[in-house]
Length: 393
Ligand SMILES: *Cc1c(COP(=O)(O)O)cnc(C)c1O
Image 1 (cartoon, rainbow, N blue to C red):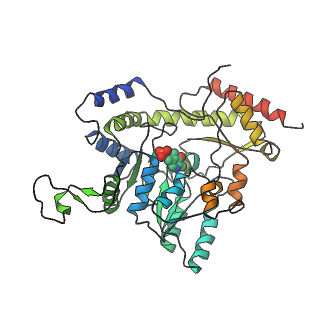
Image 2 (tube, protein in one colour; image 1 turned 90 degrees about the vertical axis):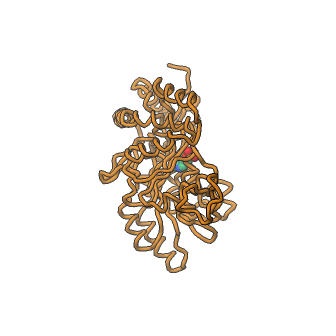
Image 3 (cartoon, rainbow, N blue to C red; image 1 turned 45 degrees about the vertical axis):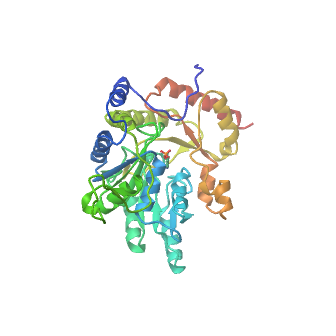
């Protein structure tokens, strides 16, 4: 049908986005100007958070979120094995240890009951996590209300990894409202809901945390006179108080983000329509969908399907056949703990069986706003043909 490889996700850039980026390129300030604060303000307004700190990636957002919550050596962070490695790596950057909570195989999300039993066990061993990172896989929020009440009972902080979930909601609150968490992080990588090329943001409702987030973003330097520990020697005075990084987003990138944000609702509507259409088109195939709770309106970042037990046996072949047919399927995700780096830390195959089983059956189909219904029909017909090869054969 067409020769281009249909990727699993891609950006949608319109002329207006390009013009707003060019305006900043022609202006005085390419970085540290007024566009980043404006982007932070607008995104916060969209998700119902008070403070936003824009950074150069979603990974940096997770990193400074951990730092701002005081994660350090001898601390423990828990997350889901079914996520991008950054959800766990952020703990390693702080010298802390990582552990995982298995998923609910029906939703792909962190399982609250397994979280509860693991917390009870860990309390006995005096080994409770300092931070928990629930991951809103595919754009569907985790069960934040129950996770939040466990955080009060067992005394840990919560960072929502909402890299997939910008524009989604939970119990009628937008993801990012931080009603049930300390910090929520977003990514603006081109495959995500909106893009700044590379970029991310950490949002919070806590002024102290917000202040730390921006300190860690910029070298640990403060320029506000009310925070100075020394008497200013002159008007040039600034002070470094902690060891921070340069994780700044540029104003050029933020201009793209600001413009993209105005398309968010259109993007979401389109993604929702395409997700619904997939459900219709895929109805007769031997696959199932991840279950979305009625509490959630998904941001539909990923179209994940689960192959039935016959097809799952041929996951690798089906994947390869789809790629060879020009359809860029993906696996979200190989369980984090099975990466060589994490195996070296002592994790083992078999540690989180639901995650491992899920990863043997999951397949992500293309989903992005500029995908057409004709593309979807082509994708589903191709998949149907390929699955037929492995049935009864
Ligand atoms: C994309 C992503 C990240 C990292 O974001 P980057 O902007 O690529 O650094 C973290 N967690 C999840 C779940 C992601 O999908």
